[in-house]
Length: 245
Image (cartoon, rainbow, N blue to C red; front, side, top):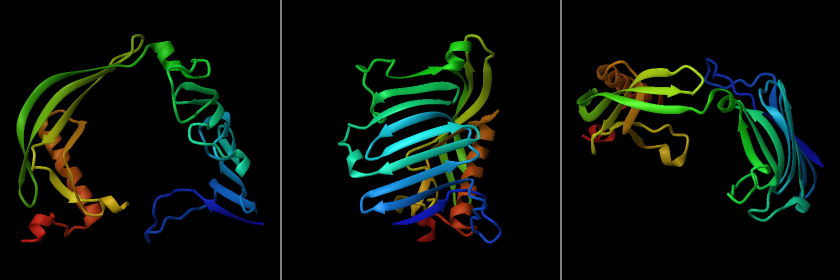
């Protein structure tokens, strides 16, 4: 028999670049009873979720949450192993202004043949205020130049008014700009380096942001790329094509 635990707190990095964990408000622990039998407990003492569930999918998992506490308890054992598509869950959750439920159905799939009373959701705000409606109205569209230190890139920018509304609530309107770069004119910047596929050079193909003019949108794209270059490549970073010259 053995056990171990993990502190899952996430806080901003300190001055030395490390990520201090602090008090384990969020964490998990394992107790290994036998070769293939494990007990697992996870807790979150500052949670905003609410609900309860029981599921069987290669383990028996129990979940109980009521703000500010949330607990998960699982038993991993061969007796609970299931083939693909045979997982089952009994669940009632409340989050994002909706009530979600499963009555012994597969939590990872959905079928139109499954009765709604066994797998569904009730959206409280949609019921009270009406469903969200989205619309947009184009205001301007122009060819644009995106100035970067190494050269100028070219694209198309569109200014539009976007509206979100509900039948029984106020309409929210914002101005936004979408900038799309032309083929071969994507603005380069370094990848984040978090995975094997994003360690090299990346590029911005398009961007959408709140802005009151096309000029403001282009400036926002330039600022976004420069921040990515400085954050992931350092102040001396240059595009691969320019660095090879």
